[in-house]
Length: 480
Image (cartoon, rainbow, N blue to C red; front, side, top):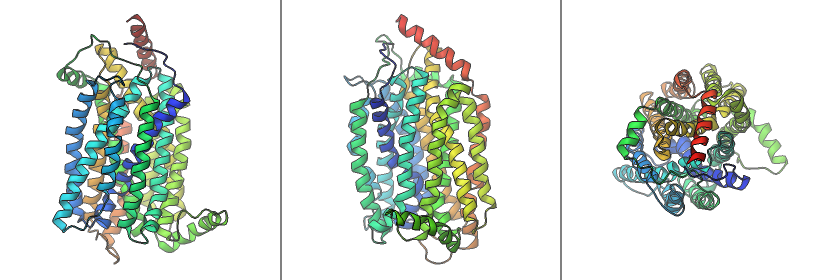
């Protein structure tokens, strides 16, 4: 491998992190609003929405991601392997993100076809942009501590995107559309498309690939896939990533239903009114006057703010105890605060907020580690096989992400249908639907997290192995 300085400037770390901020304006919208958009804004039946999310999502995971990974690892350009993909896809991704959340006045069958086509294109372009972007972190530096630092930068950026989408976006949609959520969604997505495109271009211009494969390194796709099947840490990370994103998609998409149908409106109003009045007194009026959207936004805000604090603790904990151990312990702790939601009555608003804050903090510690561990797995593969195939290693993350998003979101709409939820209904939901929304933010999403924490007992790259891999690869690269 040809290498230069492994240290990254603050400018490069910030520039790289803006790419994740841009991608998460799309991704967090998918997690938080895709199911709700299809059922309560676009007007699809829950059963049809579930089928579309599931079928298209699996196609994206098992066709788009491996294809992009194979092509990216074999890309040769003056800009490197992965940076060109960020440049090529920046504008198309912004355009299709807007189109996918638009609501043309079609007959019902036309709406189904429109949803299938636009969601397919969105996931294709997201893969073509975000998989090379993720792989780029593995070739910016081979320094493990610099990687941990880079992960912390990028996930602070992720939290900012998540903060906007989950805290302010619902209120902005309602206000921008004058009560018409379809109009409001199109206006918001227009601005997000423009801002996201600019940020991706900044990422392209401020980063540089330093870890370059030796010219004599040649491997076929068959050899790369063979290496993966023998790479136990890669298999574990693939399953773990899938489980994590099943939970994130399920509970993240269920919260809006939870606040609209389960949480007691009077109790919510009493809880949020003093907070909104305090904001209003200092000239902050982001949340509007609707108690549900305001309560939903403040609920997410508490979790995200404390996630950012947790992210800040991630690097020092990982440097001291190793990524695997820190990830497993804090993932389990975060699961407990999800389970607590099963015991809250509709009027237990303050307890809901406290549990969300504590969940956000404990889960925040794990957030940067998932991506940093994938980069470690790429090093592990090179350490074992003496060949580097960064993008196809990172396809574990993207396949897991897509499968998790697909399964979690489709389970959300499937379970709503199972519990007889009535889409876009002003009438009172049946008791079964209300019980379903409660389970969707408590028991159901806790199961994948618990399994994921247990799975880490079988992940062999501990703190000592991290140091050994870094030392051995550094010696090989200096020799070559």
